[in-house]
Image (tube, rainbow over all chains, first blue to last red; front, side, top):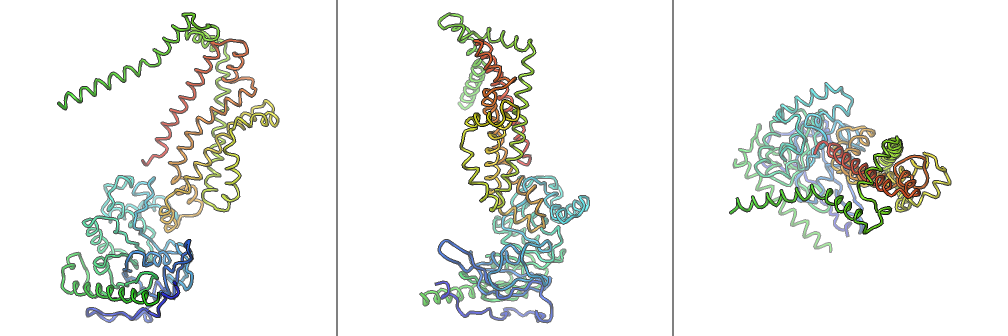
Length: 292
Length: 259
């Protein structure tokens, strides 16, 4: 049954929806993340589920790439594979040339829930990574204090996580992930659990933060607005089994802010994205119908 | 209207505090009256005043502090050893499936056997030595703490573990910080149960034969028909385990310091 759902559909080349300066091809520039023919299969009580089906992609250093798709399309699984938290069933994930087999401190991750250590203050949460990597306490706390200033939580440096709001906790989680100065920052629906207002503020914060840090970012979301606002490229995924449908360049000028959400060029891009998801979704659905 | 309601609640609250303060004195008073009225045999059911005299004699004879320290040592040492072992093995069985497969079935078979049932074999193994008494207390405490830790470790938020992994946390720190502190709220609940279990097994250990101890003194007094001393011993044991439980509750509240 599952095997029948595997259609010969392959990721198509980037569809340029707005005039963008020609991107350097991934051949010309060495990709920092390279996913080759990756499949991930989960054992479930009634057999196996293909969460990620023969996905290939490359992310260039400094790029901000979003993975967009409906819930359960395998986008988080794909991200976990890049983090070394999920082992490939077939294929390979390489970050900075090394195959991912286990989590690595040069790859940071922010989850949907902040997952802060409840027994540590904000400062010590952020200092955890540098300490774990063997930096001195003074050095680790200095790194933490710099990051606390950057995320604007100076007053809360010694507060415990449960005393902070959801948005503040997620800012601490981002700072904690940045404390090890990762080359790659993976974000798994980091603003998904926040209310709309907080989410908008967090998106603006992330855009500002991005200019100051030197990391490649892969961002998982099901919110197309969020993906277009933040990203250089948006990868649209299909559900069951997870596959990349389209690779879209977002050629909107930077610096961006949430003000572009009403820009006509932005709206045109969003409409195209939505159309694409709708047609591709329908196509996949019909293929599934025909197969059964 | 609402003011009347709240004042009524306050006066009801005051009344209940007053009644609460009178609870124990009233009980002692009724006991004294009944025992003195000769409705009951005063030898078997002595009045509180006789019990108080027996307790004072116990203290003056110098035996009380010997008994107290012997019992306190058994409870404290047994509790600490059992706790240390329970937490260590609980972390291992909770975290490593192989260790759990090896030990959990065994522990689940041994755990439900009431520790008191081990008294005969403990006497065979250890005679009337201190080691045997410690063994009983350790045995009782260990399984309670082990189970609480084992469950606590399995309930540690997976997200916390993943976050710690992503930050490069070394394996040892993962166990001693993330897992242990993550499970601490559960462990503390187990430790509090273990406090009362340690007293419960102390009774069995001293009844089985000892040369000093509060329960030992109770047994000797019973053989000599000193009912006042028996009741005094029970009161001392009750007070001791009450204090232990309350101080532990106070410590436990601070143990999970981030709440």
